[in-house]
Image (cartoon, rainbow, N blue to C red; front, top):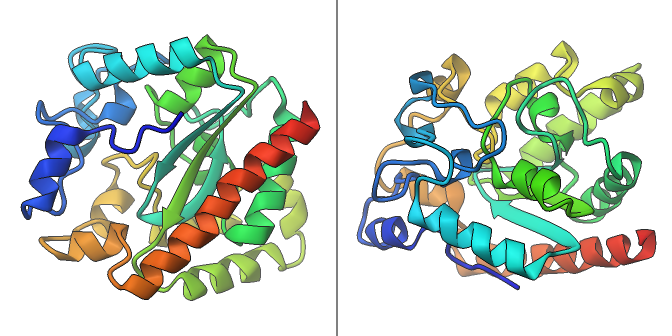
Length: 252
C-alpha cells in the first residue's frame, strides 16, 4: 500500500507557489501529531506545531486507519530536504528500538551502502535532539510492526559534498566505535547541523540558522529541479525500497 500524498490540502497550496509550506491547512505538522510521546510544546514553532492533541487532524486520523487495517510488515515514511536513513526511536535521544534492533541496523547499513552513503541509525539519537509524535514511532510501537524506517531521499545542495563529508567522518580513527554508540557524538555534530533532517527537524537554533529558505528556493531544496535529477532520484530510491523489503523478507 502506498500513500503518495499525506497532506493534500497544503500540497495544492505548494503547487500554487507557497513553496516553503510544511504544515497542513490547520497549521499542524502531521509528523508531530501521532499519539506516541506526543508533546504540546509551543516552543516547537510554526513549522513543527504538534496540534491541539494527538490525532487532532483529519489527515493523521485517516493515515492511522489505513495503516492499522493494513497491518504492514514493513513501514517506510519518505521525506526530503537531506539524505538520511532512520529507524526508531525518534521521540528521544537515548534509545534505539528494542525489537529487531540489530536486524534493522543491518538492513539500514546494507541499503545505505548501496543507495545513499549517508547518515543512518536511530532517528532521535543520531541527530542529537528528540522528536515526539512521529508516525515512525507510533507504527513501530502501537502496531508492533516488525520493521519501520524513515528515509530522507533528496538534498537540494550537492549530494556529493554531503557524501564526501560523511565518508570523511566515518573513516577517521575511532569513528566506527563512536558510530556504534551514537552518531550524535560531537565527532558528527557539525555534519548534522549543516545538513539537518526534515523528518525530525525542530525549531532549535541550528534549525533556524540553516533553514532560512524563502520562496522558490524551497522547491529546489526538497525536490529535483531537472529531469535528469528527477529520474536519477526515482530510479535509485525505487530500488532502495525494494531492496529494503527484500532484506526484511530474508530476516523474517
